[in-house]
Length: 68
Image 1 (cartoon, rainbow, N blue to C red):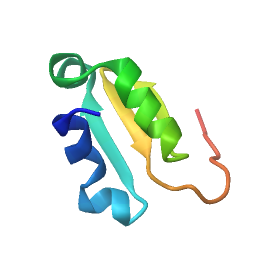
Image 2 (image 1 turned 180 degrees about the vertical axis):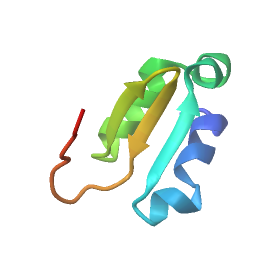
Image 3 (image 1 turned 60 degrees about the horizontal axis):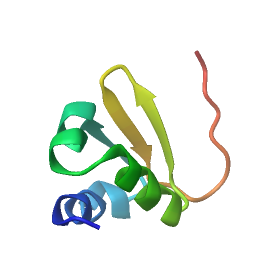
Image 4 (image 1 turned 90 degrees about the vertical axis):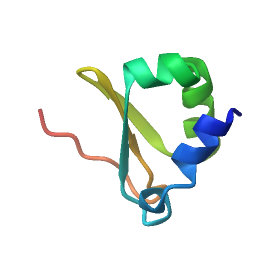
């Protein structure tokens, strides 16, 4: 895991079970989509690609209901 990816998952929003967003550009520049996906799966979080951002739901409890 890169230091940049470490920093994402050390954010206060993660510990509170909230949502973290990162631009696709930033992920490609400082890490990789593959590494980010691996780290999300390791934590049993959920991730979606919405527009030009990765949206990570940092909550392991329950299910996600998506309304489109």
